[in-house]
Length: 125
Image (cartoon, rainbow, N blue to C red; front, side):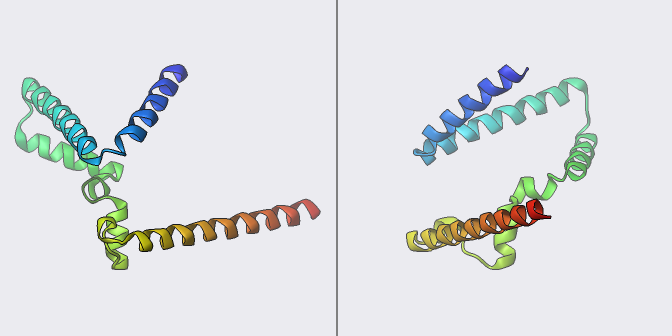
């Protein structure tokens, strides 16, 4: 099972890396995949004789209980950026994106230094 998981993980990384350079084609392929998947779910529900109301209730409870209801439809980044009043990524200029990356890089370096200091203190104690 681990070999199969590793194979698909590597394949996904290669495909995602390639398609990320072609966002319109990537979106088209992703859209077809999502619609095909949900069509299969829909058709299977129909074959099983599940009523629309039962399907709605089951889906709502499933999404709510797994924590996917809000983030699945909005995405956590969208929620957080909305709360902060930030611009959407496509509205940001290259300079703003580079500044944000630099800030994150600096924060990461500070955290790394703090982690090293804590490890030294623990080793001394």
